[in-house]
Amino acid sequence: MIYRIVKFGDPVLEKPAEPVIVFDDELKKLVEDMFESMYEAHGVGLAAPQIGISKRLAVIDVSFKENPDAKLVLANPEIIHTEGKHTQPEGCLSIPEFREPVTRARKVTIRAQDVNGKWYEKTGEDMLARAFLHETDHLNGRLYISHISALKRDLIKRKIRKLVRAGEWH
Ligand SMILES: [Zn+2]
Image (tube, rainbow, N blue to C red; front, side):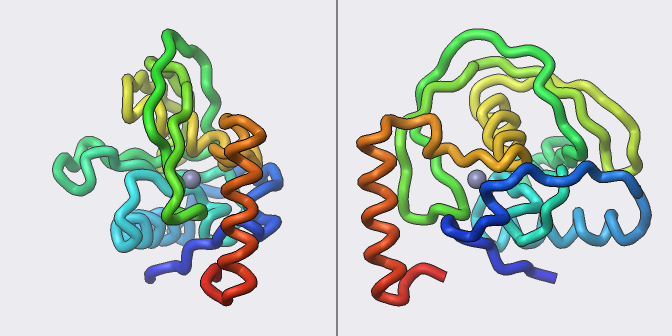
């Protein structure tokens, strides 16, 4: 099932999500649907709040279907180590059409549970490190535009308000 991606302005995107407690078939189906919805939207990461489900759950595939090993499920993820700095343009499926350079750690280690509830640790660099931070931010109710200057953020919000008024933001 393909979920509709929730856009900036919906309060679900700006509140901390609830921990995943039950790892059952329903969760497996949700994870499958999240991958499907992410690919459909041409994204490399998707957090559950972005489909309106306030759960600490995200999926990532920075290879975009090229490498099956790159498919990651992050349930209840925590950032346990960060290193270096890296500035790259960043976007978000919930804030389509906008991209801004964001400075983040270049190397990031997470601790998370997989779809079966098994804890694992993984270190990512560059794009994967960025995805770990971006998706974990989502689960804490934080969007990438909170990492850019207030001036740029206000400009984006103003443009979005215009799109909302024109009925082009839903
Ligand atoms: Zn995002």
